[in-house]
Image (cartoon, rainbow, N blue to C red):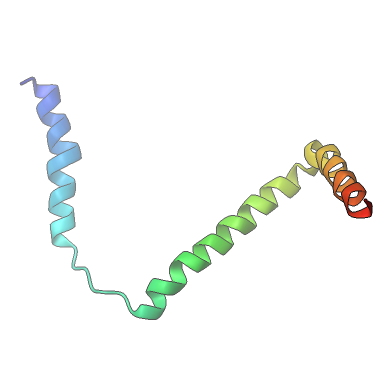
Length: 76
């Protein structure tokens, strides 16, 4: 075992394990357990939409093409 490997194991294995054992974890309530994934999904969706809208000119032609195809199918 080399010194570098021992330092790696100590830094990435032992120290985080000691930190985790020192943290006291309390159970979450039912409402928070259910609300956190929903809120995270909404925030992620909003962020993705904002990033797409920031560069809309790149996607505008694709969106126009899809919209025209949807309209042409609706008329048939």
